[in-house]
Length: 478
Image 1: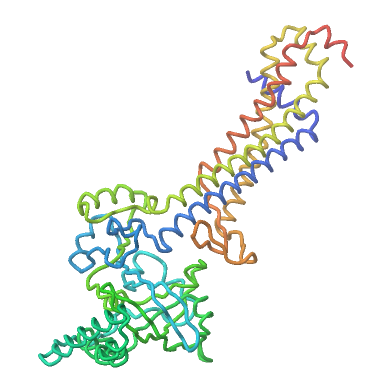
Image 2 (image 1 turned 90 degrees about the vertical axis):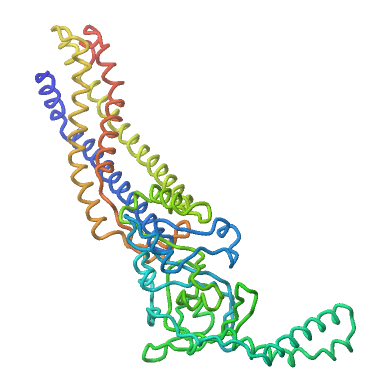
C-alpha cells in the first residue's frame, strides 16, 4: 500500500504545474465554500438573535385569542404577584407590554400610531430595544404620577344622571327625525362640557405630561426635530379610546427618537411607560403580552410547555419559533440555497479533477500497460489513480482549509460592511449593517468531506479506464 502511495505522489510531481493548478482550484473552491457557509451561519444566528432580542423574546404569554383579534380587553394579569409566578428557574427576565392604536397630532400634522407600553427596566432585561435610541433620552424608569380619582357627590350624581338622560333623548330624537325635541334636549356642546368635567373627576389625567419615545420616520412626518442643543421636549396631542370605549385627549412630551431599521415600527411606533398606558386604557395591572428571556435559548420550547402546564388554558404560552415560524422557514430556505450553490461549486471543481486525472492517465498509457504486463493487478492500477486523486484532494483541501478558516475568522471578527446598500430587514427582522460570519466545525468539515467525495467520484472514470487497459493496446499507444 505504501508503494502505491509513493508512486501516486511521484506521478503528481511529474507534471507539477498541472497538479498545482488543479490543487489551487480545489483550495479556492473550499475556501469560498467555507466562507459562504460561515456567512450563512452568521446570518442565521443574526436572524434568531434579532428576532429574540429585537422584540419577541424567547417566550411570550398572551390571552388565547389576543393575537387573532388584538382586542383591548383580551389581557393577562401583569401585577407583581402574577409576574412573580413566572420567575421560574431558567427565566432571566420578563417584561409586560400593552398595545393600543391612537391618533397623534403636532401642530397641523397628524398620524395614526401604535402605542406600545413597556417597563423600561424590565424591557432592558429581555430585549435591546433601548439600544435603538438614536436621539434624545430613553423613557423614565418611573411612570408619570396621575391625580387621584374622586367620587361624585349627590349633586354631581344627579347632574350625571340628567346628562345621560339628555344624551339618550337627543340620540332617539335624532334617529326619529324630531329636530325640535333634539334641540330641547341640549346641544352637543352644552352636554359635553359638564360631562368632561365629571369624567375628569372620576378618571383624572396625569399631573404632568407623560414622556414618550417615537419612531424616527414618525417624528420626521410630524415635523419634529431637536433644538440646537439636541434637546426635544415638544408637546404632542394624543386621542385614544380606552377599553371601556371612552375617548380621551392627553398631552405627551417627546423624550427621544427610536430607529429600529424596520419601516412599520419607525413610521408608526410610539413608546411610553406601561403604567401610563394602563391608566389611559383603564386596564390596571393588565398586559396584552409578557415577553420572557431565558438563560438557555435552546430550551425555549421545553420551558414554554412547562409554563403552559402551570398557567392552564386561560393563557397561551409560545416560544419564539412558534410565534415566528417564518424566520425558521427563511433560515431553512437560505441553507438549502447555500447548499445548492456549494454543490455546484464542488461539481465544477470535480470536473477539473476529472479532466486532470483523465489527461494524466492518457499520457501514461505505455507506463500503465508496462506495469500491468509486469504483473500489476488491475485493482492496483485502479487504486493508484484513486490514490493520486486522494493526495491531490488532501493537498488542495489542506490549503483551502487553512485559507477558509482564516477568511471565516476575519469575517467573524470584522464582518462584511453592507451599510452602503442602506438599511434592510429579513422577514421583519432588522439586520445589522455588518454581516458577520460564524466559524463552526460543520462549516469546515462538511465542505472538506464533500470535496474529497466529489473528487473521488470524478476519478472513478479515468481509474476504471486505466484498470481495463490491455497491455498490448497500451504499449502501442503514442
